[in-house]
Image (tube, rainbow over the protein chains, first blue to last red):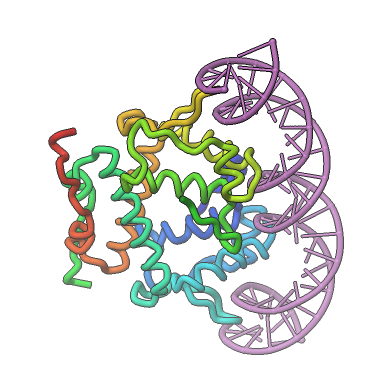
Amino acid sequence: MLNLDYRDARPIYEQVKDGLRRLMITGVIREGEKLPSVRSMASALAINPNTIQRAYEALEGEGYLYSVPGKGSFAAPHTGVDEGRRRQLFQVFDQAAAELLFLGVPGQTLRDRIGEREGGGKQ
Amino acid sequence: MLNLDYRDARPIYEQVKDGLRRLMITGVIREGEKLPSVRSMASALAINPNTIQRAYEALEGEGYLYSVPGKGSFAAPHTGVDEGRRRQLFQVFDQAAAELLFLGVPGQTLRDRIGEREGGGKQ
DNA sequence: TCTGTGTACTAAAACACTTCATACAGTTTT
DNA sequence: AAAACTGTATGAAGTGTTTTAGTACACAGA
């Protein structure tokens, strides 16, 4: 389900966190879907359960999942994602755009990279 | 010229690096302009010269400045910025856009945030 | 009851990173 | 030539973070 890169400078819990978030964004993991338990995922990746727990805890703080003691952890609906995460994303987006423009990339080029979400009305 | 925040989790050399890059992007520091020497900037910020040196070294690696032993460090022309930095920026841009779209932000909203650069044709 | 789940806490070890002190080498100015 | 400036290199100390290990508790479901 996830790949860890020990040569990567990023800590493991962060790789897990970002990896899971990406799976949700790309639709591989759908809303309400049950995630692997901290223990099973830890043994699958051959790491300590506490490390997975830390990743889950961070994602829950962002609103990407919710955990129920005794039951498990589940992907949260998009609407539940934290406002702080949204603000952070806008800031990253704006700063990257500003620097790319500075480097001479035409604004039209950047606009063309933004793929619209199909079926947005259906949702 | 720059503000350091010791409560920030980001290391000092990174704050210096990002701060200087931002000054160049916003046009406060212009192409070819001489930057403060590592020692003068270090004493101005009350930190070790090596810390400034590290920031300068990183920016030189990105192509944002060039240093000449005995003379000083100077802001490089936009065209000299490293291709790796460009690729990194595009990746950050794309990922942020993808997640914002996933969270329900309309593509049009994102496109509207991209301010065009005046005089782009002059370049 | 037993198994599987999330959660909490402490301790420790390992590791990496950041920062500093010092010294060296080149350029410009006096 | 000397002095004062510049960037550069190296090693060591300091500090924090990451990860693991171990133990324990509470809840849900078969």
